[in-house]
Image (cartoon, rainbow, N blue to C red):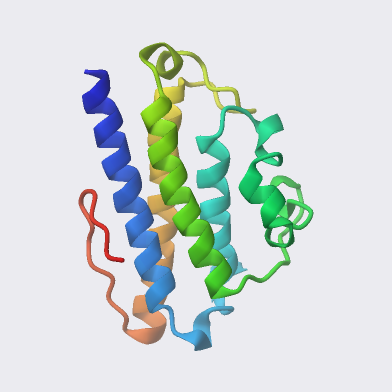
Length: 172
């Protein structure tokens, strides 16, 4: 059963991240920094990846020490996403695409290492009172929630249609 659960989670992470990737790829330059609700498109894309990455970790304290974060310190700046203020940073498309590819690879590696025991224990994140297994589902839903926001903006502003991705499917 563990293998089945890990496989379905990996497939759904990939589907959600693939959907987000399509949004990033098909966003016209003219609306890359335009608002999606209160925040620019690029900030929504970064926020989505930032928290996908964050919740793939074991706990908050180790997050900033990840090698990808140290190697890309300029991307993360002062970690404004973890602060109680509105974010102000804008992001280049190439940096977002690289971060998305990192998150895809990380999701596969993290899920591969999960054990039955670890999936059943409470997750180690503030304000989250569920298991590590449920945290993965929560994380996938968060990615899909923001991808849906971006899809709507793309349709309304640019008549760009992003197709449904139901399971693991790589387009690159």
